[in-house]
Structures are given as structure tokens and as C-alpha cells.
Amino acid sequence: MTLSFKTSMVGPSRVGKTTLITAILAETETMLAGSGIALVMNEATEMRIRKNRKDLRRAVEAREFDAGSLGGNQSMFRYEVELRAAGDTETDPGIPFSILDYPGGWLDPAVRMSSAEAQRDWPACEEHITESLMLLLPVEAAVLMEAVTPAQRRAVADLLGFEDVEAMARKWARARNLPEHRDEPAVVVIAPLKCEKYFDDNGGTGRDAVRLRTLVEAKYQSVIDIIREETTDRAVRVVYAPIDTYGCVDLMEGEWIERQDEYGSPTLDFRGHYRFREIPPVVRPKAAGSVMRELCQCVVSGRRTAEQRRAAEAQGSYQAALERRTEQKGFWGALDYYLNGEALANRAARLRSRRTLAEARERQEELNTMLSRLAGQPVDDRVDEWKTS
Image 1 (tube, rainbow, N blue to C red):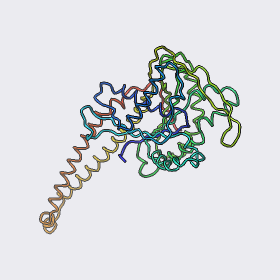
Image 2 (image 1 turned 120 degrees about the horizontal axis):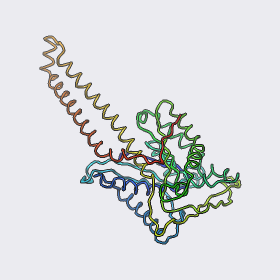
Image 3 (image 1 turned 30 degrees about the horizontal axis):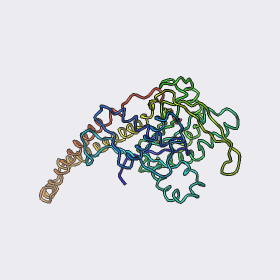
Image 4 (image 1 turned 30 degrees about the vertical axis):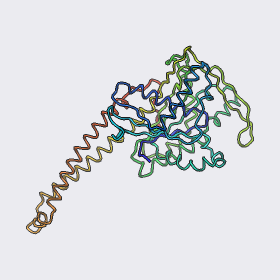
């Protein structure tokens, strides 16, 4: 498997994870326009994104929007993308990212037990999640905002999969304390989706941004508390990023449907009915690019720390070799130093250390050139960092 910077989504079925990835990559390409950096996908990822875009284009052309008709992922899939400087070939190293998608139902142990595919692929999913720099938590905004009656509010926890999300957040947070991950950057992005109805900054007329934020913060406080409990001795950033997944639809009505849960108890399901707010519709996601921006910030800060560490180690090796060369050795020590090859090895060590220092500076400059534009993009007004304590 190609080494890459990993991110994972943890959310229930039908929340819109697959469409979210499409929006993230689309807005990233817009952000990169004219920057000299290209977003490159492998063939499997390009085919998957092309299908997602075709499905959305069909809905746009038909002028009938049904979020459920756009489909979700029915199996595990890794979206493999690279940020690559213009003019680089496939053999040139880029900055690789791997975003994991999988059926949200797999988070439920009972569902995994009933599916041979889930039992086969879940260990790989769990490994990817625990190795991820970013934990992306998609939230169906309408489920929170449209729940009015006691029965509807009771159903929210099930529909957003809190039990399963909390369990995976704990596993991810615990993994951040392992020696191999302890010094890595770590970020959690809580991303309400399909927020078009609640904002007025992307063609809509909503005035509910404050209420959405308040509800999300209250409902996901338990997740933040878990992460705080498991990472008391290290930093984890928590970012709130409400996203317009489409940017051209409005929620017209939320339908609550009676059903039974897996234990036979009565509960409710939610189905949103949407319409295009303009004819012809123009797809314009908003704040989705902040996800890639956060990933790039992780890479920039992590690489900066790594290069500083390598430079310090190289400086230490050079200084040790220099001190050995100039120390008093006496006749027999000098004889050994010069005639047994230590002088030559010492010189080689000093040259290697100088070269390492120079290479570290070059790599840092290349990194800044490739990622500074994306990581330094202005933060969307909607996006905010929350404290974990």
C-alpha cells in the first residue's frame, strides 16, 4: 500500500459521506486554480468521482433533486489523491492523501456480524481510521434542526449514530497516544452537511447559523469529552465546519417516518425533501475545501517539525564529528585516528551532515512552495476551531 496522509469519515448511513468527498475535491480544485499545484487522482478514484458527478449532473439536468437517489457507498473504498506541482510526472513525488469511505452501517457491530464483506474488510477500515491524521465527522444538519417533537428529538441520537461515533472516536483518540502517533498532528472536523437552508452566505436566505452551531456543539460535546479524556497529554484540534454540499438546493420539508429499531422498539426515521432554489441550478459547495486545507495544515506543521528534528540531529552529528577531530588524542590516539581510517570516516560523517542540513532546507522550501497556497487559504467565515477543554 502506498504511504499517504490518511483521513477517515465516521458517520451513519445516508448522511452523505460520498457526496461530501466529491464536494471536498471539487472545491479543492477551485482553490488550486492558477496556483501551479494540481489535484491528481488515481484511476479508481477518478472513476468513482466521475460517477458521483454524473449522478449529480443528471439530477441538475432533470431539475428534480432527491438526495437519496445519488446513492451511497456499498463497500469500502479509499479515495487516493495527490497534490503535485505543475509539470511533475507520475514518477515525481507529490503529497499523497487517502480518504476512507465505507458503508456507515458497518460502524454497528450487529451489522458487521451479518455481512461477510464487512467482516472481511472492517479490520482494514479500523486500521485506516486509527492511523488517520484527521477524523471527519459528517452530521446531517436537518436531523438536528428539524426535530421538534419529543419523539423526533429522541430519534436524533440513533439517526446520527452517536453510540458508534463515540466508540470510534475513542479508538482513534487512544491511538493518538501510541508512540508511533504521539508526535503527529491530529484534528477532528465536525461537519454538518446540507446546510443550505440555514445560511444566507451562499445564495440562501437562512438565518439559523447560530442555532445550528449551538445544537451541534451541545450534541457532540460527548465526543469532544471522550477525545479530551483520551488525549490529556497531547494536542488535538477540533474544527467546526458547516458545509453546503450542493449549494443550490433548499430543504422544503422534513418527513418523520415511524419504524422499529434493531431491537424492535418504535423510533423514527428522517427523510428530507429538497428542491433546487434556482433554474437552471448551479452547483456551488461551500466550506468543503476547508477539509483539505486542514489536512494540508497537518502536513505543513508535521513536516516542519520533522525537518527541524532532522536538522538538529544532523547538526549534532556534525558537531560530534568536529569535536572528535579537534580533541587531544596523543601519539597512539592520533595513529589510530589517521591510519585506521577514522579520519576518513569522520570527514565523511561531517560531509553527510552538511549535506543532510542542505537537503532539509531544500525539502522545506519545496514543501512551502507546494502547500503554502492551500494551507494558507483564508478560513471560511463559517469555520471555527473549538477547544477540547
